[in-house]
Amino acid sequence: MAIEVRIPTILRTYTDGEKAVQGNGETIAQLLADLESRHAGIEARIVDGDKLRRFVNVYLNDEDVRFLDGIDTKLSDGDNVTILPAVAGGMV
Image (cartoon, rainbow, N blue to C red; front, side):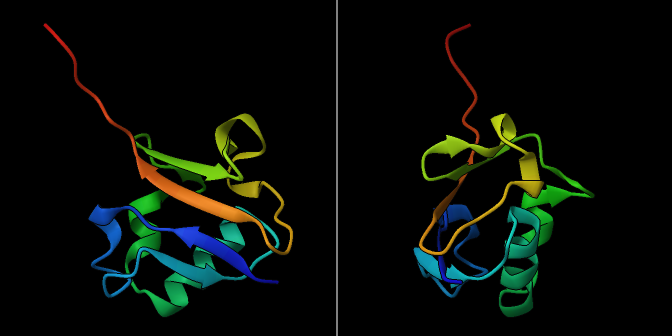
């Protein structure tokens, strides 16, 4: 099963500068483990234990996985996963 994963600029050091990589897995958790096997260190930047890190957003086909089943969200062949760091700030 081929899943395209879009990588934010801040994590591209783990993917040799690639903006998108291919991964496999039946769930987001399995996909991240698959990415870790080829891009050491990336998984720890996205998850903390069995949850997504607070300031990392993961989207499955433009749906925030936090509103689905989190890292247990099921994947299908041809899905697109986007990893985005959360942006904070504003006027004080």
